[in-house]
Amino acid sequence: MISKLRRTFTSILPVEKGRTGHCNGCGACCELPRRCTFLKTDSKGNNTCSIYRFRPPNCRKFPRSPAQLEAVAKTCSFSFENKLTGEKISNY
Ligand code: SF4
Image 1: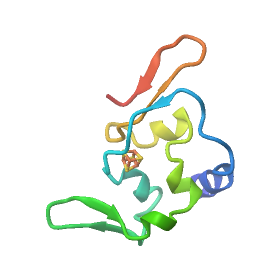
Image 2 (image 1 turned 135 degrees about the vertical axis):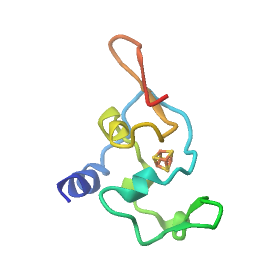
Image 3 (image 1 turned 30 degrees about the vertical axis):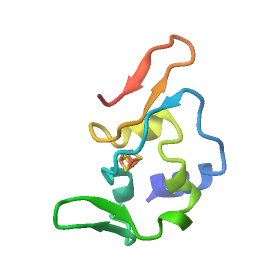
């Protein structure tokens, strides 16, 4: 619950520089810490957001930082580039 509150309050901040990639619709971020009531999964396992056009900033900006990316290990298709070393921080 603390992580959800932190994510909500920090969603006013900009997405950290160096993020690349796109959303693959895995839905992992929609289950932090519990499954969102607006997340719909069809019989083939495809996820959609039933309020996508009106989703709040904490959903719109996810993952806003490398720390948030770590919370969805192995599923999120975004990555970050380390500002100092240029190293790619990714789940892939
Ligand atoms: S975890 Fe990443 S790829 Fe999966 S739905 Fe969220 S933003 Fe998209």
